[in-house]
Amino acid sequence: MLLYNLNNWQLFTIAFGLMLFVSFIMMIQSRNFYTFHLTKRRFSIMELETPATYAELVKVIKGLYALPANDSKKSIGALRRQLWVDFLFMPLAYGSVFLICLQVSIKFEPGFWHCIFLILAVLQLIPWLCDIIENIYLLKKIKQGPNINDSKEALAAKRKSHKAYLIMEGFKWGIALGATVSAISAVCFFWLTGNYTASSLKYLLITLAEIIVFLILAGIFNKKKAVVR
Image (cartoon, rainbow, N blue to C red; front, top):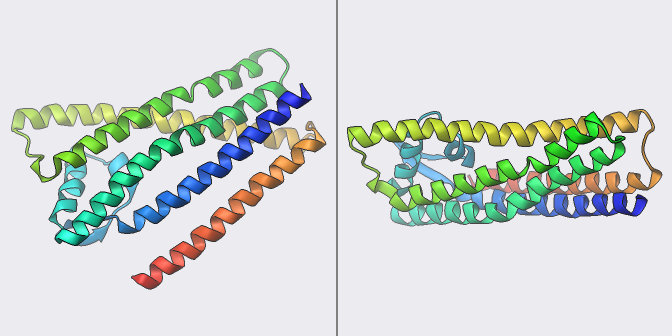
């Protein structure tokens, strides 16, 4: 059982570290995220993933093609690459949540909380699937480009599908974040009550070191980006 626990922690630290590495790559790609609406401006991936309305999504995508040719090529290329890289990010992110929930479930005796965290672990398949659908949807919209000119009938249908899209986003973030917060809370509880193995400390330190390195690199990148502006 101890070896099994250690293997879970090892897999978690590897998946978590790779997730942060891929996140940094995606951060670098986002430096070319520009769109045009009245003026050239930066945009974030969240504007595409959670636009308030269908019109907002169309506005950002059309704005990519409204930029000067060279800027448009860079922005569209960077966005497409990030969406493809995101397919690598997904199993690392949701796999990390799966592993930490699985690890927490092992700490409980068979019963209610053991089952709850097992369910939270398995449920990560849902946000992963939602993320895949989301990226495929966005890649198709980007491919349409400035040709997104819907008739009134088609626009009404697109607005309805957009509401379903936002509901899917709610499920994705709700399940993933809910499981993450629950697992971290449980881990903190075990540490505060002294219900942990001494060997798990090194994995906690490795995880903290990974986060610190990521934050340092992100800080350096953001400073350089500010200088370029």
